[in-house]
Length: 238
Image (cartoon, rainbow, N blue to C red; front, top):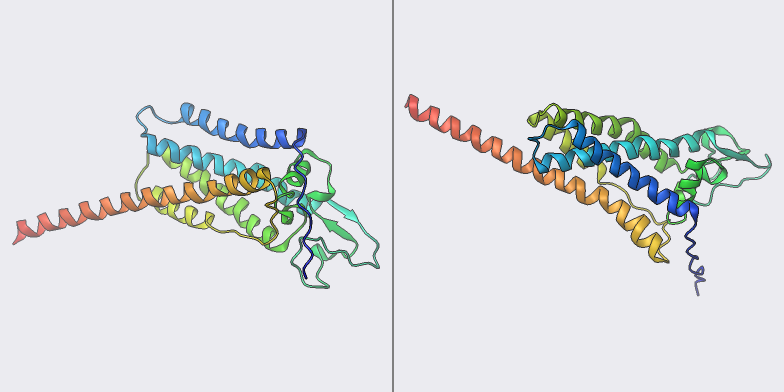
């Protein structure tokens, strides 16, 4: 007979509200930037893609960048003779983050605003409270790779360059965003399941799929035009 842990108690406090408002403020910032930076003739489709990628890059730099900072610089000391791996850690026995046997790293051990933010999200996915090696590996790629690439896509749209470079890098980034999954999830209440896990994670599913769909349409149209031009040229030389 297996023993199941009781459902977690949902607590909506100042940290919860502040964290949600912080995410919303990033989206508002991206929208205002689209009004100020994009040409008036920019299509609705490209404006949405601009807002998404600016929102994406800011989330990567500010939020996930702060996660990495806490993983590398926020820690608590433990007795050197004891082995206390973080409960979310997937590291094998005897493997210690950064080689310190007497430290536990991660936002769970910090008091800064960003540490509090990740402590809130870790209520739904406990990996984000500690220095989980798999998550850190992915976030290093996300912050230092996906973040700058998303900004580059925004710059292409701002320069009204909606050609091959925009859609090629859009496909690369959208494909890279479609990863994730973990058994360390708490789905015992509405907030954790539908807001933290479903809503926020599904943004990085539906919006990349939208980019891939638009890229497919643009690439297909370009090939159709190229094929038509080749066909006309062939008839002229026949």
